[in-house]
Image (cartoon, rainbow, N blue to C red; front, side, top):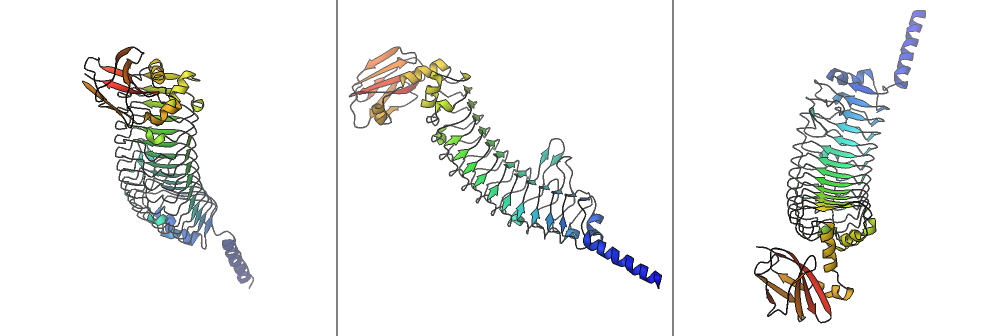
Length: 464
């Protein structure tokens, strides 16, 4: 009788203990056997306060974790630090009840994982979402992941969103309900990604936006509702990117603005509503970029302007309206066809520079501070003259034998042509708007056109 009573007490104590501590503080899973026995070892477990890490060569499914609804720490399906993951994990089903993760989610180095099916109930991530990562010499990413559709109930990411090295991912559909990213958005080395559709409801990014090395991405379509970026905007090494279309509603960039090594990008159209950049402008090694006019509404920056090795860029027009007092320093070099640097902001800064200036190895007219200042002086116009300046047309330009000059609704009184140092080399009244320039040496000149009470000036490149 006493033995029977003692046995009953032990059973009751064990039962009460199992009810009061149904879950471990954290989980570090390295085998399929641990997953399969989870419900046996931890019956009724729905919440884990700490981290859940899943790394194992023989892990094929997560079915044993069914019922788990909350992870207070991070969920790591693969490990970034050591570049190891789950080479045979086919699906995330088993996490179907998971709604909230208190810190980060990492999905990394899962070689045969094709989708995120199993995360359909996920609503919020307090930390960051890492989908892939690349570690030099160790590989990484999720080489078979082709869809993010299972994330369609996710509405907020408190930290960063990293989508990195998923070579067959073609779309970001599944992120359509995310409206807020608290820190960085980084999209890098997803070589099958053709657009950013799926990010359409994001209105602000607390940190930076970095778009790097996505070799099939042709535009930034999908970011149409983005208004502000708290950190930097960096677009780099996207070899098929022809347009920044998608950023039309962006008004402010909190830190640096960088456009680097995008081989077929021809213009910055799409940035037309940006008015402020918190730090530097860095535009370099964009071999097809012809103009900067998309930056025309930028009125202030908080750093330098660096424009390097843009092979076909001819003019700095587009930087005209930047307050010279907000510029810290400037360098323009190795832009083979850059000849027109005398926009208002640059002229104003060069008159009283507050920091380093490096201008060299560009085309004639923009090879030194002195050349640019000479052009600034030669092209200076009054407010009244500015009203008709845009009507002046010189063609062809570059020219060889003859120069045609016209200006709407005005009669040309006289034309003079000077070198950049001010030497007059031609002065005459054109006949039928045409002037013989066959005797001029190759180089850059200033053409001054006198009409009524105004004198208008434009640059002319003579080629031989």
